Image (cartoon, rainbow, N blue to C red):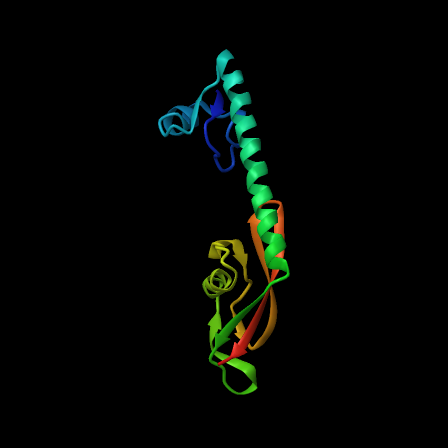
Length: 148
């Protein structure tokens, strides 16, 4: 069955796409939940409008993400943590701690889920942490962990 997606659906497509899916999937899941409508001749015009709106929103989001990235790349975020001998922290610095420190020190709010930290920081020193604010905008944040 051909459908027009009204919102992004994982594994199927993005808003405004016309896709071919199984009849049961469309009839029992996508259409009742309001995620899609059956594709008709008029649906093509609606799909173009949805894609145009999606592209404009994506361009605005990317521009905002690039602006934030230029501000944060040059900044050094300092986090105080209790440490023992040899610079080993008693706890660890997590993405939530980094997000809160960025907000306190720069006034820019970053969701903790947008910060990629392979494992929590457990040592004093300077660390590079990747942040992804948009699918195409990824940048490093310099985090300086100091013993308090």
